[in-house]
View 1 (cartoon, rainbow, N blue to C red):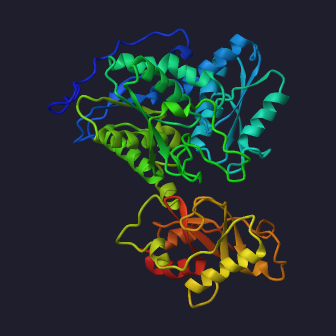
View 2 (cartoon, one colour):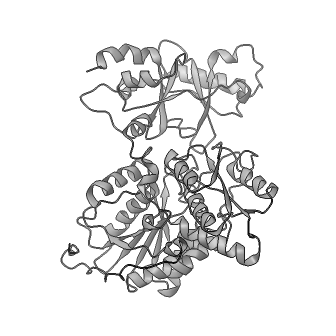
Length: 488
């Protein structure tokens, strides 16, 4: 099939690459990924947009490059010896790359992942022989149960243990100076004018961006694609749903320490992208371009499309697609997951949870460090602007953020507080000692009957999620009252 021709006046297609290669090891097949031009989702744009298809690497992600480089550097300096154990804290992709390298080089691998990592990634890690340890997410970095701290302890206590430490390991960005950057420059014959990439550890955007800026004499612009609440792009640091990109900051952390692998000076500007836009883009890419990509690729490509909108046919945009959508079939491509987390709008013809909470009174919000006196004030203020039925029964406990004066929507609810729990308590008692777990969640676009069916028995309240963030509380009696006549 012939390559689609560009619109009149646009830059022509890039030259085809070399033929099939023969490798002596699977590690030799890491990298050398193709550029793939977007042709349908870019309709109306003058500047061509090419995807650097890192999902076609051996481990299906860009992290294969850093994994190989980090292990090689550790072998060279003696910190990883024959028979050693590779240990890492990761959201999954770096762990997969390290597990592949470990399998080929004869090492054990132990990977610590947050408990929200997709089941698809966990299965791949185990398939490659990695020992997987699930750790609680949402903790301050200094907490002993944070994934990073667990990985450090394991590496220190395991004979032959070596911590890869991708966040601060200089071999991480070096992998992209040595491979990704030169590949893009050669593949575009030096015509690339804009690089768009996400920043998680920062190794990819740092190494690739620095190489392209240097070889082009500063002509190449580097755009960081960032989740809307990520600190890198100026967000408030609250949680988001797209894995392996951005920087989440727990407000109880002693300091907001950025990875040493990330050199912020390389980024000319950031484009902030919401979770919903990222997810919407990857669904379009699968259906319009035949590309099944992960959520962080959606973030990057959304930013690339915005970038290209202001460019001309003389420009050329390369966007790095970090991984495949096959690692997220149980999340971003799962209709039940999308509905349950509020990333699917309601069917206009069917009553939905969102209809039941329209015009609902504000939910009281407190922080773990608030006192009983402050919690009582929060309930009273909610009652003043709320329902004539009286004060609300339940408050949400959320981590403090810069936008706490705007309590909805909330991205980091860590508990709940019954108004009755304040009875008889001293005014200076902390909320953290009285709070219970967060209420279970239902999606704003779900049918009441479906939401009720998922609500655990004995749970009177549910948090309503829209785009993954809490917008309201709903009582199970309200769901039940509408469930019967909501059934087809």
